[in-house]
Each structure stands twice: as structure tokens, then as C-alpha cells.
Length: 496
Ligand code: NAD
Image 1 (tube, rainbow, N blue to C red):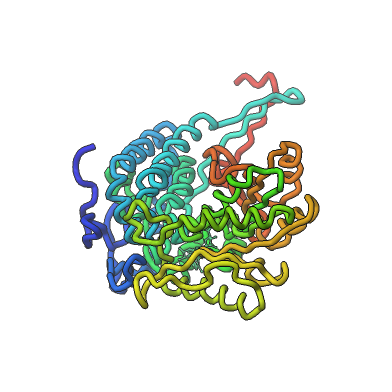
Image 2 (cartoon, rainbow, N blue to C red):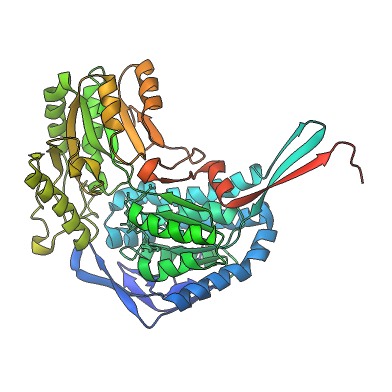
């Protein structure tokens, strides 16, 4: 790929990469008079950019662009749309380095993991849905003397709202199926990490996406985010974030009778049976501190069979000691800073309240001194709660804080696993296939990993139960959500 896609509009230099601070609406850059500050968690004294702060008028402008572009994009068909989405995927792959540079400075995810793993998933999302939408365009069968045919109709303008952790990957996870299904999109990334989605807009432009098909609006959730979801022209809302925000958006979606999908928080159980490979289990458990625990799918409640408590804790300590807190650019770093001082205070607040509650801090329990007074690193922390009702067990912390509890038998493990309002994912370590099957069936969660973690096929359903969300994305499930299904029933013998 030749040429520099990162041009046009008001731009700032972020680690040598030119990033637009504007919205991207109807194929061009649009700025707002009001801005908000974006700083780097790696050094909070560094301001990266003043970003356009969208308002009601910007939201309406973006939805108008998406509504106007919709008929032509829908009519292009799966093959035509797929060609453009494949070009976008290729462009993402060709610009992994600048994307990694910007995402690392903006939200402090490890540079190495962005380069090698996370960003190329963004490209794969576009490729996968470009192909799936062609392969799964319709379903035909016969019954009762009639031919039945189901086709997918593009639904219309779609609002995609994403959180600050893994902003690029999570945005592509939603935008790819929405666009492949024939919808036009207005994406609002989180205000704490807005930059990489601005680069995605540049890449979509270079890929030849028609004006208005893909739009990016920057701003504060309660302002422009709320205005976007309230617009009655919107036909789908896809949200990833916290349950609190989902409740707000869900109320608006209900008022407008708009299908709404919500991928929300988690408090996943990490269950270790005595019959498991304890070393592998303890290593993976210590790995739940990766990305500073800012991972919705993390198994943050360690539930360990009582008979192996001491041995597990010894191994877990050994592996946790191997973690290196540091600059996310450094290949030896495994724990990066938390995203924002407000989030840092939130994580610290959870630990302080646990201490006051009488929960036992088994390790960590304090900020790291890295980065001085303004540093945002928090020590990997393990807390044994006084009771299963403790706040630290029942609420998502979204930081490097795990809880530790023991169980006596399978029934006890299932009781504890299912004892929070969440149900996003669960991890089970056991050498028994029969037990793995029983546990998997009994645990209330959207994804169960047995003796592994974070492995996922893009065609598999993804989502949560309870406070972890509404609906499923992934594969056909996402295409169904972003489409209106239409049924044709034709009586046999109808020839003209
Ligand atoms: P958040 O709910 O505060 O914000 C998410 C997005 O919603 C942001 O873009 C924000 O600007 C926007 N927003 C806020 N108020 C809004 C409103 N009234 N109307 C419209 N938009 C609004 O969440 P966060 O703190 O950015 O993200 C962390 C949360 O996301 C955690 O709970 C985490 O578990 C969850 N998460 C879930 C998944 C998943 O796939 N299940 C993945 C990543 C993160």
C-alpha cells in the first residue's frame, strides 16, 4: 500500500503519527469549537491532544450523513461491500506500527501485544465479516408444500459506542458486521482513548468507503453519546461498556423501539480443581493481571479447591512475582498503568473499602511508586474476602485486583461461580473431561474456557448473561442482529 492515509483536518503529532482531532462525518473532517483533553496514562503530564467535543448538532449531522448514505450502501450488496471491507483490512495490516504507537500512548496497552496480536484482530474482523455476509446471505428450505426463504435486509443507520480498553479492536468487532450487513455506522469511541478510531476513519477513507457510510464522532458519553442513541433515525445500537451506561442507553432504545446489544462488565470465576495441572492453572491465574486487569473477560475471582490451597498460592505467588510493572513500550513490561486518574482512584477505593470491611489483603493492596505522585501503576493485588457478599467479590473492579476463595466440592464451586450478578465468562481448570462438561453446563456465563483462556473463533457467539449484557455478537449472531430478517413463503407450483 502506498501513500499516507493520515492527512486532512486539524491534526496533532502523537509519537510521530499524525492524528486528526476532528470528527469524521460524511467523508470529511468536521471540528467542534469545544474540545476535551486527551492525556497519556504513561505520563499524565503529557497532553496528547485537544479533541473536538461533539454536541447535539454534531450527532444530528452524523446521523443525517449515515441515513443519506444508507440506501446506496445497502444496495451495493454483500460482494461489493466485501471488496471495500477487504481493502480496509489490508490497510489496517499495512499500518499496524502507527496504530500501535498511537494506541500505546493513548491507553497504555502493551506495545508488543498491540503489534503482534490485538490490532491485526481488527483487520481479521473486517475480513471475516466481508466473507461471512456473502456466505450466509440467505437460508432456503421446504415444508408443507411451500418453499421457505429467509433473507437479511440491512437495518439502517447504526450507532456503535465503545469503551476505552482496546478501543480499536472493540470498535472493529462491532463496525465490521454492521457494515458488512449493509448498515451505515456512526462510531463514538470513549473519551479516554479517542485516537486510534480517528485513524480508522482515515483508513476507511483510503479504502474507498463511500462518504457517510462510516462516521466517527468524538465527545463525552452523556453529551454526544446520549444524543446519538436518542436520534429516531437510528435502527440499531451496539454498545460495549458498563452496566450503568447500558441502563441509560437501554431506556432510550426502548422508547424508540430500537434493537440494542450490550456487552458489559464481568466478574469471571477462575476455578481450580485439585485434579488439574496446578502449575498451568497458577500461571494462567497470575496472567489475569495482564493489561492491568482492564479486561472484561478476566477471571478475577480465584476459586480453588481447599485441599490444594497452599500449593496453589505458592505457585501463584511465584508467577505473580514475575510480573514487571513499567513503560508499555518496553518488551519486558507485563503490567501497564491504569487508563486515567479517575479510574485509578476507583480501583484504589475498592481496595480501601475491602480493607475497612475486614477482607484480608494477601498481596499488593497499594499503588506502585512508579511514575511518582502522578503515576498510574497499581500493584497486583490479591484479596481474601471476609464473606462472599463482600463488595470486592460482587463488583467488577477492572484493575489488577483478584479475589481468592476456596471451595469444598463441585456443588460448592458452582454455587460460588454463580453468586454474582454478572455472567460474562468463566475459566475452569480440571483434568476430568466429565467434570469440565458438568461445570460448563452449570455455570451461568456466555463463554466457558476449560484449561485455557481468551481463545475464540470469530464465528462463535459472544456475550454475557445477567448484568454482563444483552444479546450475542460474533459470526451469524452479529449478522442477525445488524439485519432485519425477512421471510418469503412461496406455494409450490407458483411459476409466473
Ligand atoms: P462506560 O460505560 O463508562 O463508557 C462506554 C462508552 O459509553 C464510552 O464511549 C462513553 O463515552 C459512552 N457513554 C457514557 N454514557 C453514555 C450515555 N449516556 N449515552 C451514550 N453513550 C454513553 O464504560 P467504560 O468505563 O468506558 O468501559 C469499561 C467497561 O466496559 C467495563 O465495565 C468493562 O467490563 C466493559 N467492557 C466490556 C466488554 C465486553 O465485551 N463485554 C469489553 C470491554 C469492556
